[in-house]
Image 1 (spheres, rainbow, N blue to C red):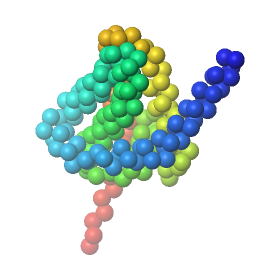
Image 2: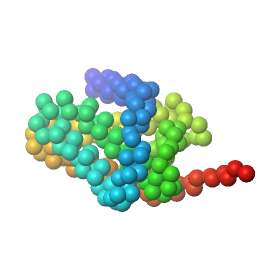
Image 3: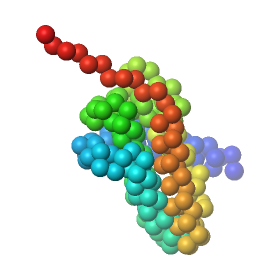
Image 4: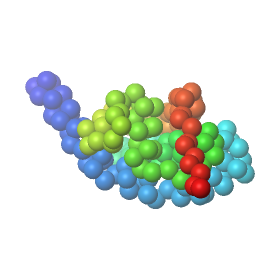
Length: 187
């Protein structure tokens, strides 16, 4: 019976990853104002911008875990969306900081996210690559869900793990060698 539950949970993650890959990533990406990220990095500096994003992620993690089962059930979708948003913002900020250009395409961005999560990425963005990213994100997020069942302690765990996740992701993206933009001068 336990094997059946495990197989069902695995197929459920695949279904959720498919849904997230289908429209979720693009929707989150499109709702992020890239000009505001540029302004934030210019005003605060990259490290303070990353710190701000980590604290925003920690806030939703703390809220979703602070009340035990009730807030966890209601807060997890919001927390997951906020965690992804903050990860995307941090990645865009690092890309802007390294390149000097703040506008990037969704395909270029997802290739970098795939690389940072160690998902195999080809030249063109593919549905399989997007599903692999979504599956990895859901697995990372799901491993700490049970810890949030205990009120107050769950809030500390949720906030702390979100904060650490954003900081580690930023460190990983910073360590990657981002390609220099190609500038073509017209005659």
